[in-house]
Image (cartoon, rainbow, N blue to C red; front, top):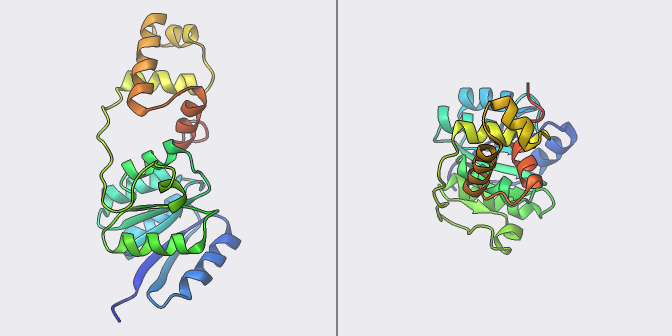
Length: 214
């Protein structure tokens, strides 16, 4: 038998983390080498210990899962990241995989899904929870995400203000641009990010920490 897959487990709820640790350590091919209670700690410990796989929750204090994934892929790109979350929205899936995550697993799925994701990630493959894959949101294996046009800084500013509830007129006044220009920036950003309405924009803002990070 080969060496066990070295895993760092990041989850801010201690009871959940302990349960996951117990389940994962029952597998002969998986070793929990570190734990973290928030995103920032996960990044710091991963940089120091360099596990093969980091399993992290999306909703964590100090640094959320998306920001942690981006930080990890920038500083230690060889580490595979598996997101473990209750969020099954398409926007979350696309953002995490687009940030470089190798796996996306739902907490409400069976434990087998997490095991498959960890093993696939350690082998250099991508894994999406079967519940999502069956709905056609993405595919298993090495399928690449389509390249999306970049959102400009001004388009991002408009989305952020929209997400916190500002009207087109208020956004126009704040950015010193016309209402028509606001509408164009909003439409372009939503098209690029495949956001269908304000609810999608708010979800995107939450995922990127715009609504709860200083």
